[in-house]
Image (cartoon, rainbow, N blue to C red):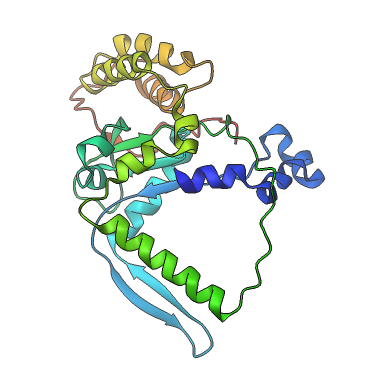
Length: 257
């Protein structure tokens, strides 16, 4: 969330919104954005390269799953998407910020995975006025910077640190979460439960409300509505257990980046 906020406040990245070639191609959708797919699991790390340059390469079905989840951010119209394996590692306070939006079969996973999103609206963020203060990066500055980063890392990994409290106290996070209210989450949860249990016509009515409840299109609501309509015209198929293959009968949600 902090990285996403910094990207949308950056005056350097904001300048691309007015680039003539990009505006001609993308119109008002021209905006630098980030998307994240989070998954937890094992992987084998190997070094690939030569004596001049070495990169780390990771081999595992979990890498494929993480990549698929990141690609799914465009299907659901969200910036941050996490699998249940990540959410199970979160504290209760951190997990309470995440919204369950689907349960899918992903290539590489033996079991269906629940998908959760972190709802963030970056549009209220203002671009920073001040440019970066020029720093002469000599050895002393690099050493002090490395010390500061190491100290911050150790503090965040300590048992006393609460990542949820740090995130919820971040000014950018507060602004990006402002428009999401309890009524919206409760209505969506009811719609999702009906969708999961096969009551698709009830789910349709509830998700149509959440799709526009916040005065802007809600990506997960639109994705589920499109799936129910495109697959079986809002009639749950025989033997429905609330699971489908990721991307099946779904299309990318049109969101303003």
